Every structure is written in C-alpha cells, then in structure tokens.
Image (cartoon, rainbow, N blue to C red; front, side):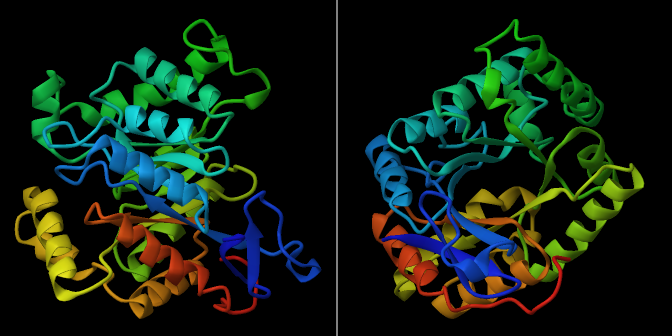
Length: 325
C-alpha cells in the first residue's frame, strides 16, 4: 500500500510513506494523519502479536503506532513495547498516548524517552499525563494526592535532563522528543502552553475534542507562544461481526471499570463500522486535529487489516475549505 489517509482543508491528498505530499495541489495543505494503537493493553496479547501489528502498521496507511499505560493490569510497559516496535519499523512515529509520568522517577523517565528516541532515529512522540487510577500509584509506592504538583516539577526537569546530556544518550541533531501532555482540567491546558509542544486528547466524540482543542489554543495564545500547539486525538474500534464487537465492548468495560457507570458512555463511543470511523475522522479533522490514534479492542491482526482498508479508502474525504481552526 503506497500512501496514507490525509484530510486536507484544501483538497483530498495522500501522504506517501516517505512523508511527501502527493500532488502539487497538496503543497501547503494542512494534513491530518491517522495512526493506530498497538494491542499491548489487551489481556493475553502475545509478544509476536505486538510485533506483527507494528510490522503491518509500518506498511501503511498509518503514520504512527501508539501505546497506552497501566500498571495494575495485564499490559506491557509502553516504552518496552515501543522499543520492540522501533526494531521492526523505520518510518512510522512511536507515541505514548499517554504514559503516566508521576509514577516514574523523572531522570529515568527522561533516559527511557531519550533512549527510545535515539534508537528509533528521532521518531518518539512522548505523551504524558498524571493518570486517573489510584491503584497504579499505590502499586509503585507513589503519592496519588500530590500527583499534580509532582507532574509540574517533572515537566521542567525533563527538559533539563535532555539539555544537560548527562543522563542517557546524547540526542544531538535529533533534538528532544516531541512532548505532548494529556488531561482535561484547566491546569492541563496551562501546562501544555508552558512546558509542551502540544496536547493529547483522551478520547470521545469530535465535539469533546473540539472544546478541548479550543482551550489548548487559548492557553497557548495567552502565554504568547508562537504558532499553535500540536493536537492529537484518540478513538477505539472493533470491526467485524457481532462477536468481535461484543468482545471489544467487554474489553472497554473492563479497562474503564474504574470510572463506574461512565464506562458505558465510553463503550458507546466504540467505532464499529467503516462509516462510523469516517464520520469520527471527519469530525476530528474539522476541529483541527493533527493526528488521531485509533486503538484496537481485540488482538486479531484481522482488525488492523480491516482498519487499513477503511483508512486507505477514505482518501476522497475532504474537510471543509478554510483555514485550520
């Protein structure tokens, strides 16, 4: 497969595997990229399955592979999983979407990120947030109540570690990883503007992303930063027969059980048809999203093949004319 879906505010364009825009009419167009999550937080995922997903994602039409992060769960460490993906890929970006920062030692977090960034040739997008599950903090002996203040301290310390180049590989011309922050509080958007390169949204309908994106842009402008923050979105999919869809719904209920009754609202957002995926992506494109990571809810490689077919077939989708929001 030669290219990947891109949704432009000028014309429908393809973004080829080497990063070139296809066609002269695409020059200067804003392009929304589509990545795919690895199945490493789905219970029972085997190492060879994760590797197969990464290899297939590299073939296109995706522009990144992404990882979630949980401690008290049948799941792989996101940095280890992405290192495995890095070893069998050379084009796609590698993203934590997100990793829980306050449960980790800051210097070791900086070293892990720098190591992955260097080993992959500068392909890491480091998404970080405080996380919402108290049991993850208790499992590692971290203080849950002070996670916000610790997170703020970590953000400036991360930059210091990378700039001083005493810990971990020297990044040199690669530069530091792209740093993205997630969350939904007003404090999150202030942190994005002060410390990060952009904002990662935790999922939901396009209208929820649009509201969050507006807050991220407003905080960015209030601080006087140039340009605009990078904006990433997230969704979940299960494509196929009723058995597949129900398996995906069960996984999401279990994964988000800590939210109580709200877990059912999350399940309702599961994308189960090509039409639902197309509508979801168009909504995020309309809101000015730069990249959407679609996460699987079962480990079958058939899910990735189905998603690849859907995404590749959306090259005719066109966002409304006008400037990027």
